[in-house]
Amino acid sequence: MTRKPVSEGDPQARPDAPLTPESPASIPLAHGEHPPVPDAVKLSGTDFANAHHSTRTKARKQALDVLFQADLRNEAVHRTMARRTEQGEPPLRDFTSQILEGYAEFGREINAHLERRLTGDWTLERMSRVDRNLARIATWELDHTDIDIKIAISEAMELANELSNDESVTFLNGLLASIASDRPVSDTSGSDTSGSDAGA
Image (cartoon, rainbow, N blue to C red; front, side):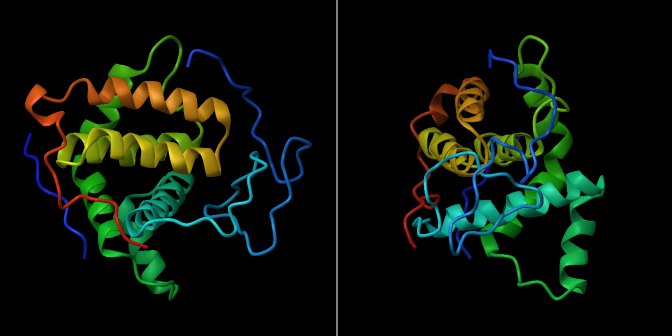
């Protein structure tokens, strides 16, 4: 497995029935807020309309959008990326493209790694699309870049907190910590300085 520096440019079972914007548990979106991925349901009472995200967090969020769409349509990531271009959607951020190209190349390895670390009756298919694709993004970063482990996991937690629910945050935290434990000891110090999430 080859690592490359990144450059800028649960124990509790969750209900199987999917939540929808009409579900009693969902919360109306605040003024200026919009679903970052199709069918996303807001469960947290925190108002994220004015939340500050770093450049890389925004890139991860955009990558989540594309992976979610590809997952929903059961199509290759490159096809989803091409369709976005055909439909005149805004260009992808450089780091977003890096994530998506990384998943397109290493998707089988990433999914296999996640499956090995899921416990009990959990499978990738059982996870929600948001959780599944956040885990894929973070696993790509942990397995194929030199990003600091704490940054990779905390970024996934931040987006899970915003887009999913409290159980997802706890579940993903445990899963990604297990994924990170497979890193060679020499990599746990987070030697990548170019992967910093500083910036607006």
